[in-house]
Picture (cartoon, helix red, strand yellow):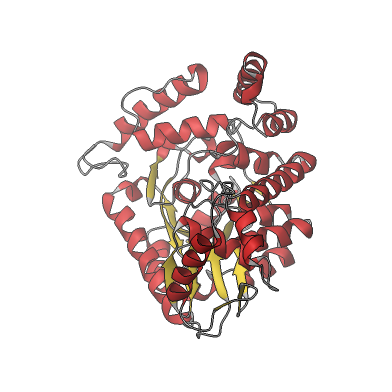
Length: 422
């Protein structure tokens, strides 16, 4: 393959390629090994699928229907660009007997449109609005793998992990919020072998970029008095949107913004020193210098003093997760959780908040017992050796790969109890 992201190079025999892939798929599902002709992106996805407990004979679960689906779609940030998707892809899908599909950042299908006969066939594998097609639930597939990897991907025939999906070929590309860079979902084209052409991958990627450009035009640039937007989960350096500017903060400034955002009434210099520095020898002069640099970065009128406080509201991804968790919206909380808070930070107050947030999510996941949510957590770097989550996943989805991973983790804990992660 000249391009590992393209499923089938021009001139290749699709029939022969399908035969080779089916043999490789059988070998993987029986022995757990991947033969050489399988693309690395597909091999890696098969392994993730198996670790998540997906079986090759599984089927998609419809999570949203009727009124719930309609309300969710109406509020979703990709709803404003659906007319653009239909304009750019609708005729191509209908004339080519393909489907246009759009999913959210969790791989849940929101819209599935296109040729009526093709839609009817797709209904047989629950490729329908409201169904969960995340990689952790349905194995290797273009929309699910595109959001899992956050990059365009093409999946051809027997590259699909689940057998009933193998007659299909699809290409999908992620779509992001143009202001914050947050993953919103993916746009997908699904149909027959003809979509294995490299142009299909380039086509959906171009459509995704067009959607991001349209979102940038539709989303008003915030005025200087608008709330600050702070993104600090899964990042060592937080991202701040302030007055229409997107700022990547240093680690220390990230810590300061996180702490000040949680204390609208402000913090004294002594409180900030205790919250930020393990080393008690750090002087107030050092802190004041950091705050002065942060004030220059933010601009006038934003960072006050005596006590130190932010003069305008802050909306952070941490607060979003906390609100959803408090409301019992576990799926929505997990969707907003992009990873541990400032994972490289050693500031005492940040460490405490990071642990409290992660522990609250883990406890809700284990208590809820949803196998898809547990699998999503276990598949991430912060959950891959989380023993409690793997035990809950084994109870909810006791497949051979899940039980094998649990046995492996329990053996590691017995041999090295100090390595146990929570």
